[in-house]
Amino acid sequence: MKKILLLLLCLLLCGCSNAASLTSDLDKIFTESEEKPVIRKNNYSTYIDYYLPSDTTELEGDELSSVLSYNKSLFIMDVNVSGIICAKYYPDNVIEDEGFFNDEKLVYEKRSSFLNGDGENIDYVYKVYEYDNDYLSYFVSRDLIFYAHALKGDIAAVSSRIYLMAKGAKVKSGDVIAKYSSKDVIDYEKKQVNLFETIMPVNGNINDFLIGSDSETPAE
Image (cartoon, rainbow, N blue to C red):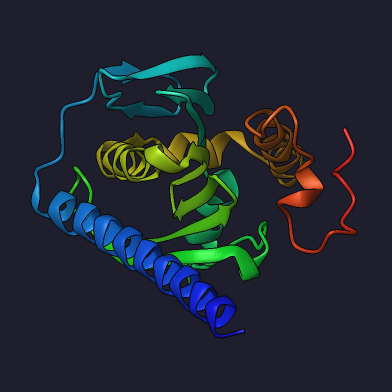
């Protein structure tokens, strides 16, 4: 019995150490990135101009979204259409998590702000969730949303690239507001869910990652 208790204690301490290491690594990424100047943009589309790191590949994209790859991890960058419209008409609203993932799996949360290339102070929320050897992460600001599925060894690097891209992006908010009606926003949010499903592991079920195991996968 003593040996079993000792083993359990060792496993618990190991888990705590890993969590502390992840928190330290991610805090360092956000702190150091806040101090760096915004990097020049090298990709341009209808509604967003942004910097794409040289070690990150765009697998597909359109005027609002890009599916990106770093090493063996995938993440999506989306123009936050509903957030931009909400900020226009309800500027006092606070940035909140969409509640996609199960908070029992939450291992890191960051709420802060950064100065973008136009000198605006932009609030953001970043959350990381642990699922065995994988991490899911979620970044949201007024202008952008990122979803990521990262291998354990990639989560710090993927987080760094997400923050770098968010900080350096120029979203043409006026053009977004002029283009999108309420119906468009509904269709856009459905598209977000569909895109999110594309980065899930091929042997996983999206319900396994969302809040509650009985959740239904959003309809096509």
